[in-house]
Image (cartoon, rainbow, N blue to C red; front, side, top):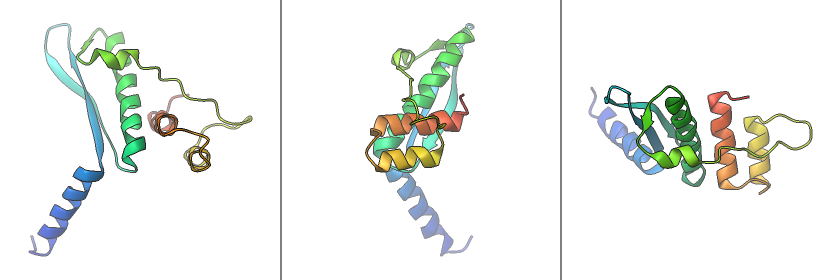
Length: 123
């Protein structure tokens, strides 16, 4: 590895540490084994990213519980994962959500939830 590559790797890692929002779901199987799932990272805007991560983990927590697992962070199961309806007869897209967010018609939480909703592919 070149000497010039190493500083670039460190810089990239440092930027990610300061601009990444990450999370993962911890659960316990019926057999008592601790496991992790749904590791997720968002790197756009921390005030929005934290909600996107929250949405993904809340969604995964519900799926894990449906499969008979015990979710460690029980608060994830009580999240209201509803997203606001899109304007008019449109469907949510990243572009529409971004437009609505920039016009201040969506909160950070609503925007983060919509982005995660789209990423998961929920309909």
